[in-house]
Image (cartoon, rainbow, N blue to C red):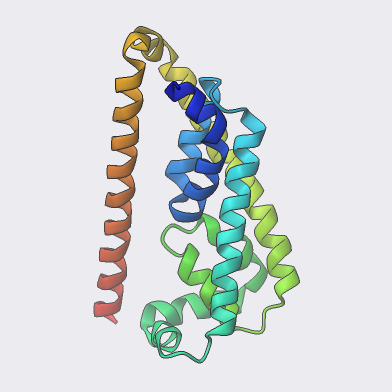
Length: 193
């Protein structure tokens, strides 16, 4: 079984899971894979939008169900949590829609919105629309990026298995680096407050 076969058969599911955990890198990879004809363009967008949408729904419901927990109260009691809540209260619909585009606030923002009386049906609608626009934008960027790199991919086609292994390793390193950066940023915000 070749790598192309694996990606063609399981690529959309991988994008779905990736969008739930680390969105932008997965979405960009989806566009690159789409350009390489390993995944269809629209199924990549749908898988990414659905994975991102469902993750935000889970975070919203966690915030709603655990709003009185110590952890959620401590997040809301911090200065960063207070700023998120203040921004949300000033423009709830805009914040709910744009949450996915605010780097580093997606998870905490969805949990925070869940702790408020914001209507879940409205969050579902705004989150679905936002997820679709987000996925379309990032997959398109990845597709265009893949187009720019097409000559390089063609020259390296005889080394495709090694190249894809390198891409996977680089993707994993980038995902870990982004998560570590987010943690450090959150810790700095918490200690500064």
